Length: 104
Image: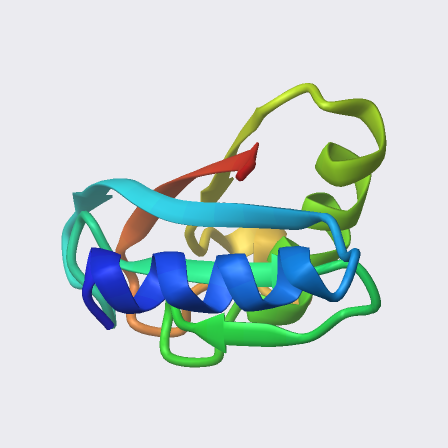
C-alpha cells in the first residue's frame, strides 16, 4: 500500500476511536520477504493492514504494537533465524529484518 492509502486506513480507524500503530521495515540483511519501507498498520483491537514479512512475524509485531499503543514508546524489533531461534518467531528465509513500531 502507498502512504496515502495507509493514511486513509489510519484516519478511518481514528474516526472509530481506535489507537493505531505503524510497523515499518527499517532494514533488511540477506533474503527477506519484504523490502525496507514495507509497512503494516495495527489498530486497537488487533485489526491489521499491510505486511512486514509476508506472514512470518505479523502476529508478534501486532502484540508489540498493542504495547506501543498503550505506552506511547516506540520499539525497534529484530527478526531473523539462528539455531537458537529455530522454534521461536522468525524468518524462515534466512535473512534478518529490523522493524520500527510507533504510535501513528
